[in-house]
Amino acid sequence: MDHNTKTDADVLANLDHFPYPFCDGAFDQIRVIHVIEHLSNIIRAMEEFHRLGRPGSRLLIATPHYTDFSSFCDPTHKWHLNSFSFRYFGPDHAGFGYYTSARFREVSVRVRVLALWRYLGFEILVNHFPRFRRFWEHYLCYVVRGKVIEFEFEVLK
Image (cartoon, rainbow, N blue to C red; front, side, top):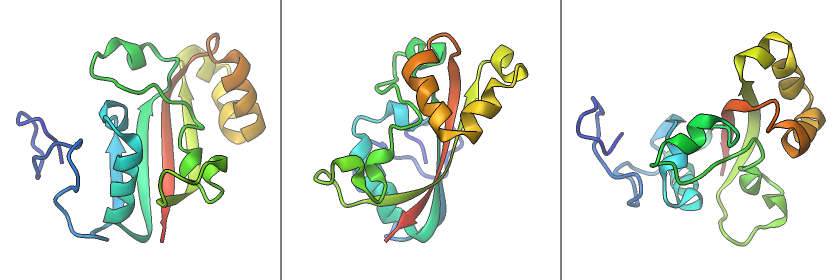
């Protein structure tokens, strides 16, 4: 699905207009690859992905890390996200449960870092130790910059 008529998308639709043209629970897997950062309302889009997924289905999201140059050089990017940006949709609501009831279980978060740091093993530390990832995003990510974040969620219904 895309809104750009120059793509080979099966369905042409504006992803900022809801609901999307599919039935409830239509998908076992939803892939949102370099899309979420372009949408006007992330909470509403996540609710729509929740509606479209069957119970237990997977939602895959890839987006630039907010410290990557590509996050800011594209004028169509509306959001600059980090590896904790979707905590709100987890079972504990990240402490804020009043905007939506859509819930997802985080299956995995993978951060890709710039090549030099990946070759030095930094990506392994960031991805295998959540406490280190938090430390990195709080204190080091503007020196050891991220490239892309890949999320995998399970739809909870």
